[in-house]
Length: 504
Image (cartoon, rainbow, N blue to C red; front, side, top):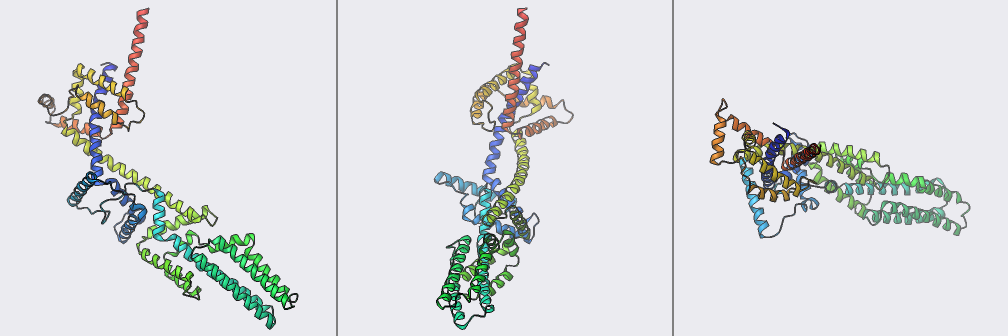
């Protein structure tokens, strides 16, 4: 038994595996599409990611939260249905088959009232959707409004106490109170604009500095008009020192950081949101102000979703928020960093989920491969025996394999559309040792008699073929190309050796 014989035998066997693996791949892809295995696995993976694997109240919350995620327009729009009568008809058939499968296997529809869901979700889509459902931006803005209101009150109170310690005259006290009321009204307007998101936090601080400076200047001018400006100049200097302390370069950074809640603070507020809401209520004197109304609206929305959050998700979000804060010491981009951390968490979770899906798919592939081998009567032991005894069959298969490899260069073995056409043409000229023809069955019976237990040889051959078929068409096409190249290289070497010997 020489090497060319072994290579031809291997090429013939691989040729059979390639044909059957293409068929098995198509069957598995069809089943995967009809039963929506990818979409089903993705939805369950998200439920496990946010709620854990144990069946409990936490898993129920995880399922409700996952349903809320899938009902969000950003994710719901990913599952776009094809238009047209033909597409709708196929959709109806596949939905009917899916319902029959669920009844037979006693499984529930993980998509709830919907018939299906997306088979892939981008990490940024998931992160934005989760943050929107949790109302992270709204909670952050609501907490920031409360801090802004408290900062405004403390600033006005500090100015009022400063005037009390200065022992102003009755006239100057009246001037001061008048200017302070106007300053307070300006401050209130800025808080309202920030609450209604007409200005950013940075703009709010800049305008507060401007209003504070205007208050100091107006008070100085008013004192000068009364002829007592010099005697009260120390009070103006004290107020200027306060403005420098609060609105100086270093003070602004601290102020912005204190007024904008960090993601870690937002996540920590979720379990005790009612207590925080009561504290905020005590902060506002005017319950009818737009600022307070915005906070009340945000906490009412939070109350709707707070019961959907499993404890494991709260803990995960707290860890991610802490990591985001450690990575980014700035103010404006902290929530963006938090979103990126959620994206990374989702991406890594889906990588693990993909590994589980591939293992499950491999098991299904083996089952389908064994069924295809049995239905096609692809007995590896009999195929090897037939190829070794029939040189014409072996040469024909090798020649067709050669033409297929030459016509379809191995750039990406996953793109096998061209190979299917070549294989169909090749099968018209080759009578492969598979199937249930009378001659094939008779030869197999003869070989089965040589084994102690009847049909064990055939069952073993089907099992070997099934495992081989489950390896996939791309694997066998790639391997066939390599062996054909090795065979051709061997032929070239032999021909050169023969030519050298003739020359001598």
